[in-house]
Image (cartoon, rainbow, N blue to C red; front, side, top):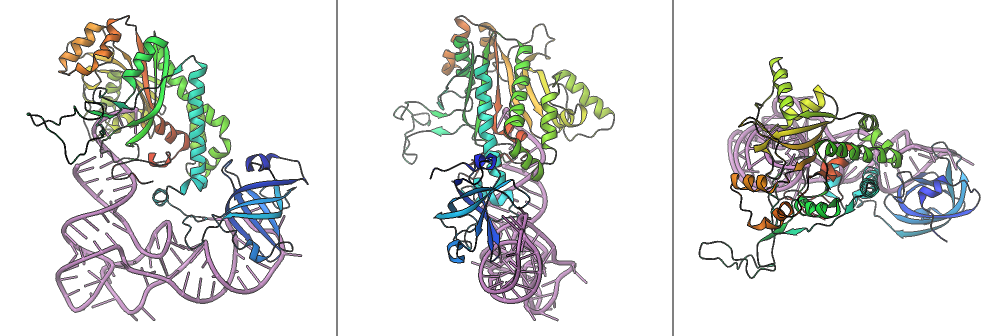
Length: 469
RNA sequence: GCUUCCUUAGCUCAGUCGGUUAGAGCAUCUGACUGUUAAUCAGGGGGUCCUAGGUUCAAGUCCUAGAGGGAGCGCCA
């Protein structure tokens, strides 16, 4: 008999007909007369109740049906006699696909910590929480592709292996086929890569942005959506060594249009979750984060604050003058630390903030320079989106399109751009105003799920000292 | 990388000032129960107190080192 998804079965009202469902047993309880099996197949967070009349099934037959086992259950769909569910299946035929030894199966019906579940990441997708998180993860990916597709963007694939380093966006993982115990060195003591696979030093990408700009300056609007790698020794609930990033890049837009896109895009994703993932969000709202759904609704409906850096510094100083204590100083020119960002987002404005026009020296070389500023107070057109709890969810900027300004900035910073002639060529041939941003997919997931640790919104997290599974 | 906290039964955790045989809930096993909803009720079994040293008449408890994990900070998305 053909399998019906539990999600479909639960919505069906075609009573008194045979139906077959297959899935993993969450629990079995009952007495000598009747046994209740809660079955889940991942199609929805909800379980379907299978009722076994013990007049038809022996205790022996039901013995392998334990928490974690996998079964195929055929029976008659009927309205439920009990409270708690509308429909249930009266079991007529049972097949056990795989047993799960109750003394060894690590998942229990209650009380498992996120830290413990991380140590069994191969089994945690079978829990309610991670089922909900990973279904939401799929929906967020679909929302992202749909948003860009509907707005005329092309999905542009940038390389994962690269010889450039996107201007120090982070420490990089090297890629080599060389035997690391038998490296050749040149006269200066540097590793000789000439006989390595690519004939030069290569690494895993820390950003697809520079290549993304090449796409935007040909196709008009592009976005990337792929894995990104940072070899930083970051031990926080907001960092991964391998994470997914979305990087749209758009020709012919200015700073205001860029901010409009950033805000519109995030709201679209949040609304998508509210529309498509109600059951999972309700579960997370109940067991993980009581304020989740309210917060999602409020972000979907509120205008983000747009705050120039200089104004942000003024607000922070004012707070300090009024007695608010900060651990770190915040003079004009300093990079804001998390406590400053959190003050602005969580205490002062109490809503997402797009911070703009940062001091030139704390931002990347490619950001567009503002005109006519006092010496020592030069700013660039960055547009970072700061969220409560999560911090920087988007890092964006208008890109400097003037060849001369970009060239001078590279020289001023003493950067070696021999690997980036191709990038400068975009400014030499048919340069155009353009802008873009990078959104950390897992940080969006943190916000949308209410989970506390980024390691719990990706199936198999990679962090310092952990590449298990 | 820095700071700090944690590690006791399969899981979640308690364990007082260093003092008798290390406890609870859940899970598991046995029994009871005619429809349960994290079922309930009664009973049984279950321990390398993270590891290695040290202090002490006596260490789960104090000290040192190590391992693993969490949080805060830095770096960033």
